[in-house]
Amino acid sequence: MLIVMKSGASEAQVEVVARTIQELGFQSHVMPGSVRTAIGITGNQSPIDPSRFENLPGVAEVIRVSKPYKLVTLDLRPEKTIVRVGDATIGGEDLAIIAGPCAVESRAQALGIAEAVRQSGARFFRGGAFKPRTSPYAFQGLGEEGLRILAEVRETYGLKIVTEALDEAGIDLVERYADIIQIGARSMQNFTLLKRAGKSSLPVLLKRGLSATLDEWLLAAEYVMSEGNYQVILCERGIRTFAQHTRNTLDLAAIPAVRRVSHLPVIVDPSHGTGKNYMVTPLARAGVAVGADGLIVEVHDQPSEALSDGAQALTLEQYERLISEVRSIHEVLAPAAVS
Ligand code: PEP
Ligand code: MN
Image 1 (cartoon, rainbow, N blue to C red):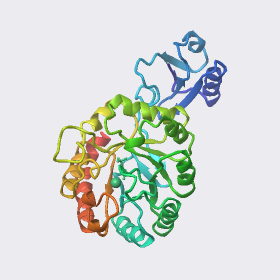
Image 2: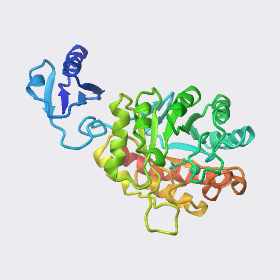
Image 3: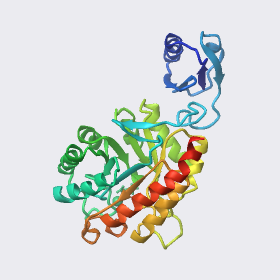
Image 4: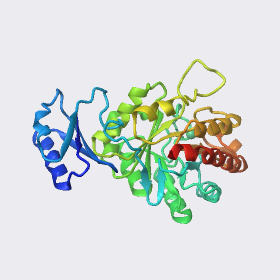
């Protein structure tokens, strides 16, 4: 259920509704909007009697939510969520670019790539310190040392840091050094991890699981939001299909599909979505063209020497060109996005 307040409702009236929800033993989620505030209710196992709220001052409407998700939905928040990290945004007017290596391999590697990322005008740097590898014998990341290097990148170039946490202890560490917690495709249904991320004050970049339906992905976002963290960014990174010409099949239809039901920003990962260097730029262009709020792209100064995902890494020159191309596409689309 969700409660829509009248446009002129006061903060005190919102507070009374939220308190009433809590007194019933449920959680209240206040979502202020430019026109009106809505309050989502979670934690109830059965329908709540709407008359508890209908006559409270400032309440315009009580709406029963029939969808399985209650907080990610446009019913609760008709305007898009803009995730803010300092003065950088994801979901706003700017095309958000998150770029960097798959894994932090050394200080020199990370700082070198970061310089090119900064030069491109991107605001976010990616790099894994904890890597979810298929083989236990493959490079697992530098761990906390990698996070320290990322913190140095942030300090040196002013880039906001996006990095993956594989477990709850990993989130504790990521919170100390980074700006956005990445939850990887393999962890999309690690529910204890999602709940922990939901208690964080950092935004969460939630990758779509390898075989996740739209509903499963949105419900994973719902896990994070139900704990009180509303700063979630969805990331389409390709799913498993029978196709053998790519590492994954990048499901670009997911972008308008998410847009139709959710207010959350959604970005595209053309690197994991294809697994192949020569496909990254065309799919990045396509991702922006279908309306993604941004891209997360893997870049390496020496792709052939990369300790993980070298085959899909762009060279610095390729990356630079990609950025200018996707910016042009975004500019063409921007007036339409605003209207
Ligand atoms: C990554 O971003 O390097 C990564 C491991 O991504 P995914 O979880 O999408 O495979
Ligand atoms: Mn990778």
